[in-house]
Length: 101
Image (cartoon, rainbow, N blue to C red; front, side, top):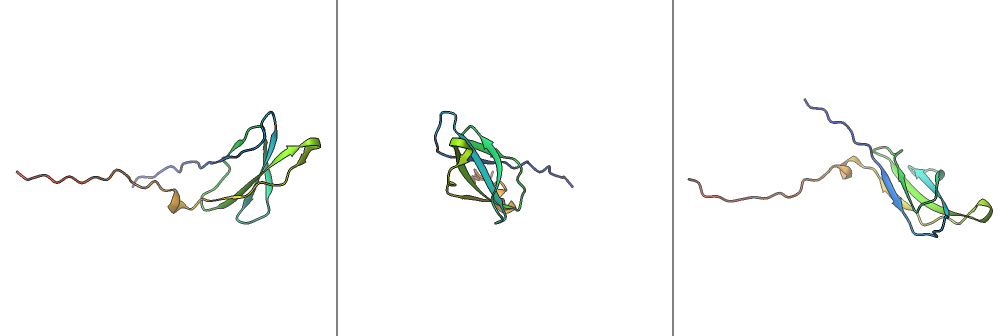
């Protein structure tokens, strides 16, 4: 029986916001719990590689403004890591009819 190695999952976030060296606070909620700060970044994107299969995550972002005061949070985005939805679906199926011999 063959075994498969699980691939590491990554959730990639991107958003619009001010440029020019602005800092952003990325917040995450796991399974409908309280939001917690998980990173402060200078780019308008973030890769969360600390995620697990079978979990539900929600994210929001804040801009860090003058005197390290965060803005209101962005809208939330939800990601559910359901194993059935993450399995690659076969594609490119073709059928050919040929005359026999």
